[in-house]
Length: 269
Ligand SMILES: *[C@@H]1O[C@H](CO)[C@@H](O)[C@H](O)[C@H]1NC(C)=O
Ligand SMILES: *[C@@H]1O[C@H](CO)[C@@H](O)[C@H](O)[C@H]1NC(C)=O
Ligand SMILES: *[C@@H]1O[C@H](CO)[C@@H](O)[C@H](O)[C@H]1NC(C)=O
Image (cartoon, rainbow, N blue to C red):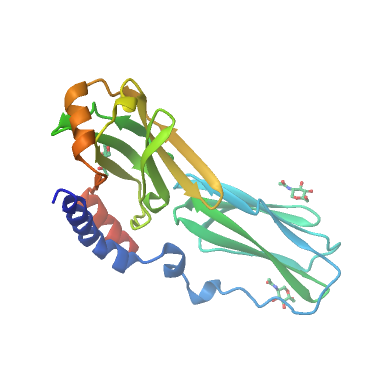
């Protein structure tokens, strides 16, 4: 049965990724180290607030970001930032401290700011996520075989792959969508989505596009391919429609630069 093919392909991919997944785990958990444990904030309520701004920010991998930690305390005793990330410059004013963080690479990382005022410590938390919108999203010309079309969409240099959703659209209709949440990589990757389907008469002349979207905790970053048109033989496609029920043949091919990945694994372990 043709429909078994994608499953075996995915299993192959899963095997290829087992190593990276088991060694690396979730980046956020991996980096815990005792020296970064923040002090427990005081439980009693104090008449001052602590704010960190922005509370949530997405940056490109390797990028830097600024956080401003401010409070309503007129005379803070101290103010500090707890993070796994590398620090850059710091500026401060009367009731605020501005911190720069460099070379952000973990997919998701919490940053905590603590201010002590009259012996009372309060904190605020911000979250940094990293992403890289696809460098390119392209579709190959459709291939008609045995009454079915095969569409191939290539998404290059996207990060994080686990938050990518690739959707194929024919006109306004979504014909296939795949979420790649199984894949945990710590560097941009190339992804190829392969979808085979029987096109009906309503599909001809319609533009087919491939939409690659990163869905990052509320932030959605999408890139679309240029449209291609399904223009091939009417008769064979109509026959295909009549003889095929629904089984769609789907495969995802994640192109792995094995040497690169190995280098990364060494760096991270
Ligand atoms: C940080 O925030 C405080 C309070 O909102 C503001 O007064 C100050 O100008 C900010 N500093 C920077 C560098 O943005
Ligand atoms: C701030 O200073 C107080 C008293 O000096 C100390 O107990 C507390 O741990 C400090 N807090 C931070 C976040 O460094
Ligand atoms: C991804 O594709 C781009 C463009 O085709 C290529 O330059 C790059 O080396 C590829 N990266 C990987 C990890 O395969």
